[in-house]
Image (cartoon, rainbow, N blue to C red):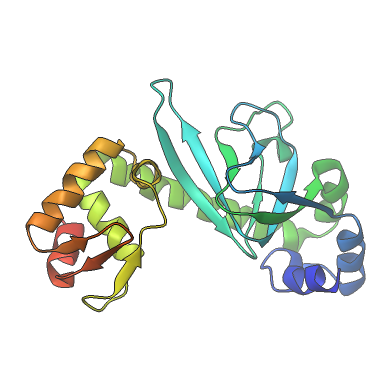
Amino acid sequence: MESLQKQLAASPVFSLFPARTLEKICELALERKFSKSEYVVAQGQQWPYLLLVNKGSINAIKDSIEGRSLVAATFTKGDIFWGVTFFDERNIMPAALVAFEDSILYLWHRDTLLPFILQNGSVSWQLSRLVVERLLQASEKIGDMTFQTVEVRLAKFLMSISSDDNDVPIARNLTLDEMAARIGTTREVVCRFLHKFSDSGIIEINRTEFSIKNCNKLREISQN
């Protein structure tokens, strides 16, 4: 529990609670363990919880009626997230939460945490700011999907997981389907552009890793 209290004290939201209140909140936390690919909650369900990632990482995955998936966000150690039902009991989850790797979460039900939040205006304000920040991130991602080509989105994604140096390997720890879900396309399209980058000498691909051979060219594509 001491570890949890340290994590909460480092959170921009929870750190605003007095120390004694933070101790009570820690005591009310529900610790839950999830294996890789296990659902925390499915899309379309009511889920009135706020979570803190203690270990591992969680993907927010939006599924379409056509069967395609989009990783809308990823939450790692120290991040907090909430279901929309946490704020409004009439709403359902617009995306599923799925463990990207073995993970440990701390959860608080709305009824447990809300009294503490309502008693502290600073916490309410900081939580509102975090909601706005997440909305802006979602808006930026939607803008990318709407106005940028798949080639540009893939280049940006490769840049985001790579070093700034040429020839530094990137482990292939994502499947083509997972990469496609990150940029809102299909595995076939991802495969096509990866081979296009390879044929152009921008990247080198083998069975276990990528190597970026021309960072400047990849950056140029990502900025189009």
